[in-house]
Length: 351
Image (tube, rainbow, N blue to C red):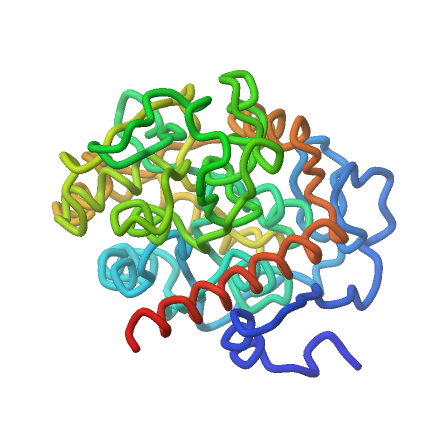
């Protein structure tokens, strides 16, 4: 069976219902390569920047008439299709290409879309960025920010305001929801940071996967979970949109600052096209609606994966995360199963 024997749309749409998930097999190794570090065999990293090099064979450079863009499905995807419409128009003018937004519903689907060549530009949430880099040839170039620097966020461990929990250690034996297995603040960071606060995931409590940050917040709000580690920026946006009332919650632990979702492009775009895209990211300024949605950020602030994702990689490695293909497939299966259970639970509530 070839890499494209199952259509991208069908794969992405079916992911949430699958109990297992496997990345498309590489059709061939990357060009003769002196070094690829931890990258998949499809890619090469001879310059040592930890991301995939542009293919040496110019025949592999892509210059499509239509560019596909998406943003991490960390929250309701429908919200962001509209939010990024002005940026898409800007990209279209800067590149002379048609730019289309493609909605994905899981981190696994987004990584697979980039790997299979169906996605040219994307915003990946902090944790899955490492998988996209190693397994999908993704090259991060920016995060949201302003003239002073990039925008950051924290792991926020939230509980209901009227609950008795005052510190992480109080949650032993309670219902604590993580988001998805590849999430930084929703799973990887808690596994490294919370033990230092007297709370060990999968030892002091059984990890329950909610699927997404907003679902964890809503679950704490409804009483389905006693607590949840979530991304502070997602939580704050939900409060601002009045999806939940911030006054109904307490944050009993907050981590150091992490970089927010990365933005970048596929490694194999034609260098001239890639240069135009990078220039557009640097020069574009957010609309008022985008600034409101993204806590005052007004631009894409340049970053490098090698430098600015160092803390994230350290946390991932400390929790046993290697961003490998085997690990991705195992964890994507868990993510799909968690999504299935969450869907079943939501259906039972409606009955």
